[in-house]
Length: 142
Length: 192
Image (tube, rainbow over all chains, first blue to last red; front, top):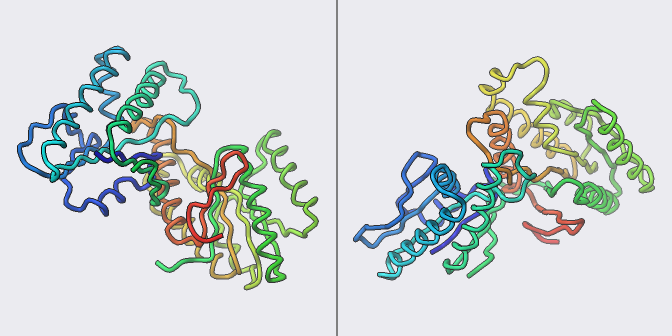
């Protein structure tokens, strides 16, 4: 798994498109649902974009603890799917929303905290992590 | 696109990016015995802003070099004509310029929203025009992309979207790009 992060509007999508032109996209920005279990029997490259939006949706129905546990299972499911074949590849794009001013809204604070944990959990399982900064990538893992 | 003689410098608030930018400008000017110009995009709207501007002015005066200061809150392209081939120009900062362009008094917000491309082009064309007429252009900006954004907050969303587009465009053509963290400039693009 390859995790791509960075601030909003930093060119993450463009960078991933250039590096994985064959990828099949699932985007929270296009209202695609979160795929918890990848059931696809095919060996392909999947790109999951806007995972921060899915997390926000989860928090409408779950507590923080439930959310974190649920998301750990999600990551485990992705990991399992990818490891079936070396021809399976999962690219996860998440916007970093964790470096700004503490949000006034409690829901935003929770969202931000859960994102911080989720990204840590993802990064541990990924063999490569890149931070995209205005179109330039910095490989921080792998 | 070809590389332009632009240095892009960004960082958080009070990260030391302005003083790094000033040092870089002075160094570039000394190399060619060129002129030093400073484009200030802030309007001194309140006391706090005035104090920040005064502090920056003081630093520049004490640097021992002569700076020509231009106060240009909007439409930077109109300045391009005044510069010469051996001038080094420092513009501080892009975030203020973008706010001024987006929220200038003669345009309402609904108007602004539909003028996104126009605002982008006005700033980008201004940068290109100035860069063509000088030895080197240094652009200072701010990291503003790490807050939770909501599409509902259209205004902030549009602002960040435009800022990101500008930064990407600038970084892709700039000779050098730096991210300043706690007064330490990290070279992200180019050679030292």
